[in-house]
Amino acid sequence: MSSQILTPELLIFRTDTDQRDYPIYVSHDNQIFIKKKPQNIKAIFYVKNIRDTITTSEAIERIRETLGEEVLSRVTDLVDKFREVTKSDPIVNFVEINYEVYSVENGVEKFIGEVTAYAIRLIVSYFDRVEYRKKCFAIVYNWRDRLLAKYGSQLNKDYMYVKASETRKSITVSLYYKIPIPTREFTEIFTKVIYGVEELAKTVKSSEDREKIIKVISDLLNQRVQNINNILNSDKPIHEILREIVYEILQFLNEVKEIKEIVNEQDQIIDTFRLNQFLERVRRGE
Image (cartoon, rainbow, N blue to C red; front, side, top):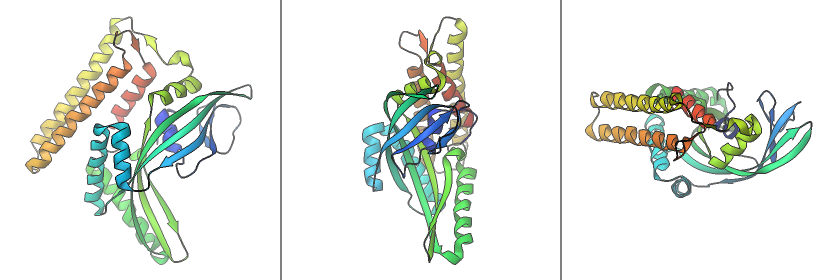
């Protein structure tokens, strides 16, 4: 992922969900360090516990129960895309991550609280004998490139990575797509220890703030309408056209829902940090 801006998503993405009981340090220049303690740290996210699913069916059920049908629909759509390109059924993992969060000032650690975040992983693998290592890597990287070429507007390339494991006789190369999902509580504590609580929100007093929000919604709607027009003008089968139109509509509704959470019901508070995060994800086409 991009290292330009430290976001909750980036920290969750960088969390090694195959381990637990280890610290993630954040330095004053907002660099992430796993286990190795740097100089001048300002925050520690201690990975206290990892709860991972074992089977894809269990992951699907946990996603439905925890995050709802809309997120599950997006994951199912991704599974279809991975299956189409790789000709394999991807494994789906749903990971619950529990953090203890500490701020650090003048070398003194202060416990801030415990928070939970989530990650969804799609994994497809290719294995063969070790002498065919290059072939395995070539196949998996080809999967990645084809997925990005075909569905780049719906995938975040920063969420993709390749890992390999091998024994004396065989090698397995896997393509991962890891989606970080911060909870509201995680985002609030993250913002407090990384950027200072005073940066979390500001009062919406000017018409400029209102116009900014309206322009964001208008731009999002125009983009979805353009996408739907492109779908309607395609040569795809009608069932695919309908499915993709439904996807675009659901995406727009999700975006509006997120904006509604950024601006409170009294239209008085705008969470500027979350709004900037949201705009950055839209700019990247997530």
